[in-house]
Amino acid sequence: MVLIDPVDRAFNMLCSLMLEDGRRWGDAAVDVQVEDARAVLDPDGVPFHFLTRSRGHSKTSDLAGIVLSVMLTQLQSGSRLYALAADRDQGALLVDAVAGFVARTTGLGSALQVNAFRVTAASGSVLEVIPADAASSWGLKPSFAVVDEIAQWESTAGPRKLWEAMSSAMAKVKGSRMVVLTSAGDPAHWSHKVLEHAERSKLWHVHQVPGPPPWADPERLEEQRSRLPESSYRRLFLNEWTSAEDRLTSLDDLRACVSLEGPLSPEPNLRYVCGLHIGLKNDATVAAICHAEKVLDSSGSVRSRRVVLDRMETWQGSKRHPVDLGVVEAWLLEAYRQYRIDIVADPWQAIGMCQRLRSRGVRVREYPLSQQSVGRLATTLHTCIRDHHLALPDDKDLLDELANVRLRETSTPGVLRLDSDPDKHDDRAVALALGVWYLLENAPKRKGRMYRLALNEGGDGAPAEGRPKARMVGPTVAERAHERASRRVGSVGERRLPKRPRPNHRPARSGSVAVSCARSV
Image (tube, rainbow, N blue to C red; front, side, top):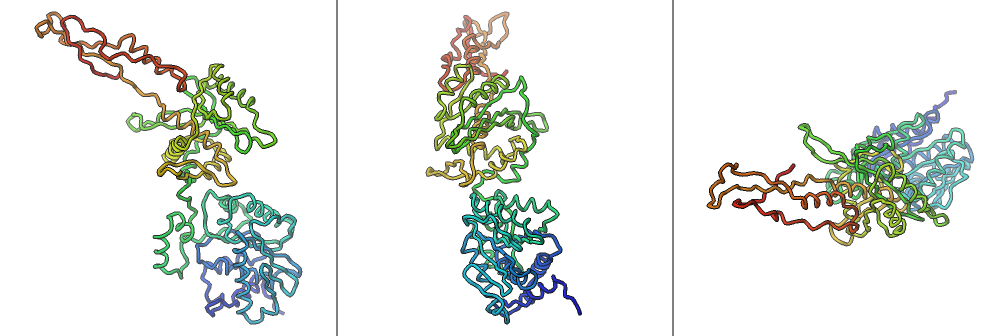
């Protein structure tokens, strides 16, 4: 008696399934499809598979054929199979593909019964479709699971809970297997973290197929390219994980900014600023302490300025237990003692705390968050990350939030604002943006002192004897006082600058003419 290998038996079943064009699957499949199918159908291989292909690359049909082959040739009687999809409509496509194979392939009608969202085999094995917005999926014991288009699932809590429930349930049943088959998505989507885990794990098989399928029509592809946003075309038809155009930053730019190992200790000669975002219940309160440093070019000249995130602290409240601003105030006072920070904050929910901090000597710059002001924050932070002029620690929560923040255009054309997906927040991004904006917009500038070129002349316009033809007259006492006051000024409205004296108020010596000019010192 000749025993048939279980992989060959299931693969032969898959090859015999009839497609819509009258060909059998085995006759139409290309090398990529064959390779993926044989890997998934091997019960002795790795249990988990993450496969990505472009749109139109027979993903749903291949999943349907693999499920049928596994049900009929490999699983024991009464086994439970689950198909996870973005919603019920997407799940219905998988069931429709199963129904098509059953209707077109001789002999399958008596072996399988297909309903709206369920397929039942004569052996008692059942395939059930579960949409990503299902109320509950805990307690399941899957022998086999397929996950369709996970990169297109919503980023809300429901789909993520479904994935958590199903992927953890695979450990309940010995020999259980799971296959994820999807087009590439946004690298900020949570499915990309699943892919990164799969690439590191020995229990996962990963196969990503670049480009469109070989049978794709070039003219239709070009029409899609001309119509779709660039990021959408690259994800759907080139199978590239690409950030959407409305993201604050790309993952590559964000990773390029990660250069710190952790919180930095204060240094006496640096100027520190703390961006403070106040949130009491749903949003978090976040304090981001930053400083700016010069970036020099090869000649030693200042090319730009880079902002360094020295420390970040987060307080998360809830409706029952809002953030205790007394704790935040105490932390800020200690940070002021160590870092001598200036605080930049929207005082709307914490004006009392800001007043008390001022009374303790802390400089607080009020930055009301309006449509225009948030637009400035968004643009400044975006540019700083894009140009790699930001130094960040390898903080998972911070990086995840920055990767998911979006730039939305407001009702005013050309004005952007920071926004986030329903299950995400932008509190850390706002606090960081406040610090970055203040440091870059209020960078100390070398202001030239006013000097006067006094031409020593006699009464008739001729040079006075015994004197040089010209001499430089330095700034007056009043001008130096104005310069010192401008460096000491704190938040807007806290201190009034002295009136700047007229540049040539000092009377020239008798017989001379004073001409004003500027020279930097």
